[in-house]
Image 1: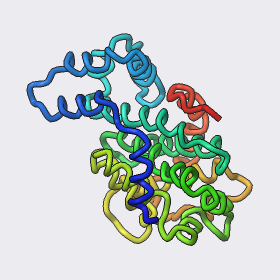
Image 2: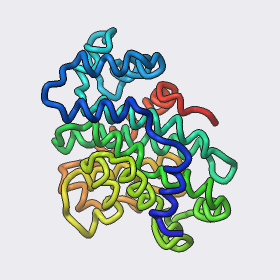
Image 3: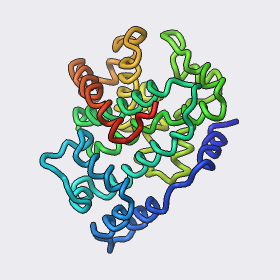
Length: 278
């Protein structure tokens, strides 16, 4: 199987709800107003609750309490609303892919950690629209869940990484491609905006190509997540490229601060997303 075939299997297991397509259609309609978006969200109590929780969470770091759907959408923006829906749906949908082939606790913590670290580092790198990088960081390794469901023996083999055999290299060895390649195929099937998909597609190549800051930030954040999950196995010195960090004006102190921020907020965000099902 190639990356696209894995993604097709995942996509065939569930479909995006009508609300996603309605929100996307409203985004493309210049006559749409905030109330139109609020009306779509308000019919789903679960989505309403998550929207308000996330609008008041560390993801957005807004001052004051956000208590209405319209206010939440006004604050985070319609693109962020759509991104949030995708993240929430992905978290719920992929519960169906859970099994014993991989360590789900490690997977979800690394995913959330990467998203939070992306957000923190994006601020340091003077990147606008940092929320899209949270989404990219969170989704970048979802291909692992698909492989764990479809090819559990391969997923188990790929999970046996170490200093000499890094995760993405093991994936290429056993699959011929990385988990992120499956992720980008899946997100393309979902018609996720290219601004989110692009850094996921290229971040493993961040040291050899120079596309934009998003790619570099996701590269750094994903390595910080690996260190956070396996501090006895990986270090900043061995995983991160000094030149790449300097190109973003990110210092050693910035890396430590991003890790501390992501670590302290990860458990809270996991609960908000209802992703703590392990």
